[in-house]
Length: 496
Figure 1 (spheres, rainbow, N blue to C red):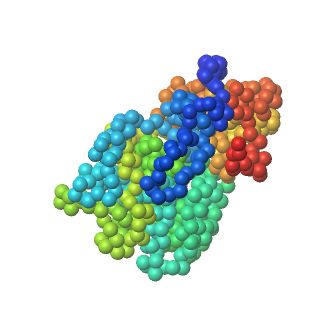
Figure 2 (figure 1 turned 135 degrees about the horizontal axis):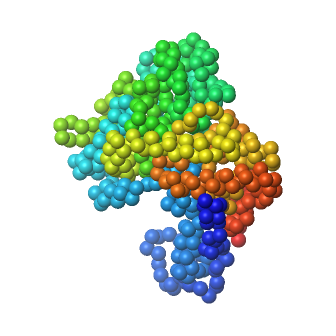
Figure 3 (figure 1 turned 90 degrees about the vertical axis):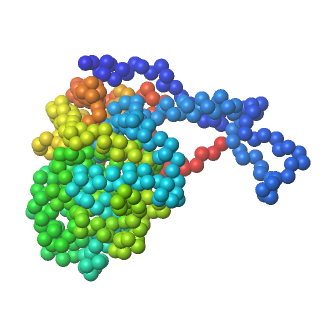
């Protein structure tokens, strides 16, 4: 497969520029600033409003403007999205259809429980499935995103320690490869953060953990992602969890990478006490973007009394929401209502569509695809850690940097070749990192196209043709930004 065939680089006929609406405005065009009728009194009692200052354009101009802008959005529906640790995968349309059923889409959070029994049953069933898949029976669907779930999980741990009178536990252990939200969440909950260095292995070692744990008297717990942010499974995690539990601490697992394990292993079996699940990552609900996120938490039976409310419970054939009155030791409410219900419908549809064998294949295919990419690119790019990866593979620019081509150059070249770049410069423990997650929903054909583009970049660098990489992309409406200047001199307001 040649590069041109792989990326169809010459298909740029509709790659157009789109000006601001102000540039289209004409004084003789009808717009939104209409003449005020004479002698009309405002029934609101407010003062008459002056011109609101929108451009004077026609309805077709407005419509075409925003439709053109929408076509510039790159999404999983338009192409391969290899972001590592983000799991940008296909969202089955069946999920969307079910979430739009009138009985679900038209609910109001203040409706009486007797009128929303079906919705409560959906939430209860999802709680049961998430508890079964993780081995953690206490499930709360309230958190509105992954980071919100982190907060809920760590607040649950703090509440449990307080209930036991162990207020001296003020420290949380976190590897240096953790997501940035982990130390931030611990700090927000009032904890000190002690970093565990992973060094050359990209994994936790017993020696490093013992050193960080010390006597454990002040340790509230640890926050570990498994598989971790280097795309590696923490092989000593059972022993590490045992040491932590013996010292009286709790194991919080960042569930961002649960799609590599779902149906294959239950996190509770390697010692997890609390974890959050990003429904968009493992169970295919639309990926955040400041919108409909969902980050349920799953906890052990011992920690369940302390987790947030509400939680759906079943009594006989009726469903109801637990409140603070039902669980006096709870940390309370995290938000006004009950979670992102539309995401719960979508996640349950995904789980029930796949079944046990299908969810197992989700994990196996995600890991297979990542290792396929690594096997094809390991001779062209530096692989910093030994052994097979899990659901994402980690490469670096070490070989290309010697020729003056950096990770950023490679990412911008992929844009020129019509691919969205992978995650770059993360995790921070690896210089020039390129983290690639193909997910289980990509075909071999789409992976091969990406591999051909990456191999072409490596070959051009080896051939000494490295100068042009600093200019890419050149075929897009916008060129490469001066990112340093943009960070130092941000322009936050547009002026006419």
